[in-house]
Image 1: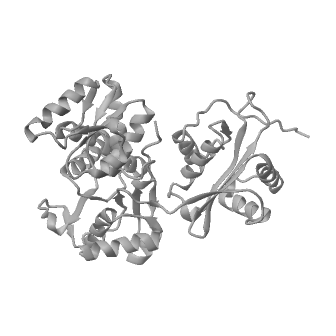
Image 2: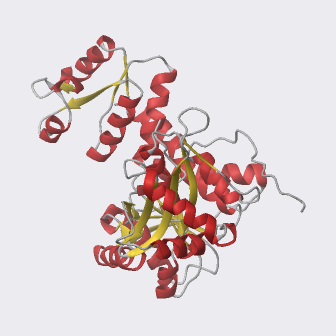
Image 3: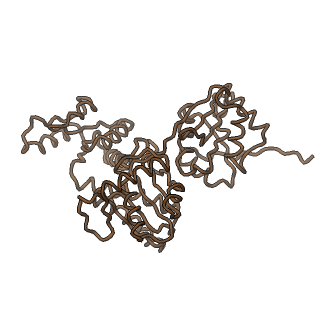
Length: 403
C-alpha cells in the first residue's frame, strides 16, 4: 500500500524570524501521496475492508477524500462504490458507471434500502454511517499526534489544528493522553482553530476571521514557500491570534496543516550542461557533510550515474535543495542493478520531506531494483530508509591493508 503517514515536521525558521517566536513546527499532511490527511483515513478504511473479507466498499465524501479512497482501493483489488445524488455531477465525471450507486431517481424513503441492496450484491462494507467513520477517523488521525510525540516526546508545548469536527479533537486528545498514561509525559495545550461563524464554545478553541486567515495564507506561501489551501491557514491563523493575545509561552509549537506541502520539483539531469560536474560535486560534498567520501570517489560516481544511472536534483523555486546520485552496478541478478550512492539535503531545508521525495523517484526510476549503504551511526538516515521500504540485509565490510 502507498507510503502514507510519517509526514514532515518542518521547522519554520522564516516564520520564527517574522513573528519573533522560536520553535514553530509545521506538520505537512499534504506530503501524503494524495496530498492530504484524508489519505490516513482512506488507508484505515481499506485495511478494515480487507480484514473483514469484503470485496467492495461504499464510501461518500468530498472529491479529495474519494480520490484517496479510490486509489487505495484499486491497489488492493477492491471495488469502490459511491452514492450519486442530485447535484453531484462531478462524481459522474470522476468515476466510471460501475463505481456509481445511482440515487438520482430514488425516493428519499428508499435510499437506505437501495444502498443496502448494492452492499449485499457486491459483498461490500458500507462506510456511509457516521459511527463507523468516526471510529476509524479516531484511529487514523491519532497517528498525526503520535508522529509528533515520537519526534519530541514531552517537549511539545502547544498543538494547533483546524477544528473541522469533534472527532479530530478527540483523536489528538487520545494520543496525548495515551502518551501521558504510558510515559507520564506532559500533554501540550491543544488549540482548535475555526472560522468565527462556526460559533465554537469550548475553552481552548480559537475563532479567526477571514482577514487573519488570508494573512496566514500569505505568510505560509511567501515565507515558507508552501503549497497551501485556505483551510490550512485557519490553524496557523489560530496560532498567530494566540501569540498576539499573549497566550503562548516559550516552548515548542506544532501546527497541523491538513493539505500543505513543499513546492518541490524533482528533475533528472541528462548531462552537465545545466549544472556542471564541479557544481554537483560541491552540492554532494556540502549536503552530505561528515558522511561525504573523497572527491575522487564522488566524481567517479557522478560520471557513472550520468552514463548509465540517474542524477536527480530537488528544486524549491530556483534553489537546489537536494541531490541524489544513482549508479548502475552492471548486474541484473547478483546484486541490485542500481545503487543509491549519494543523497544529500540542504541543511536549511531538512524536515520538508525532500529526502523522501528523492528516494521515491529513485525507486520509481529503478523499479525498486536498488540498494544503498548507510553509516552505522547515521540514525536519522536509517529511520528514513526503513520508512521508504529498505531493509537491513547484510553488513558491508571493506578490506584495509595494514601496510
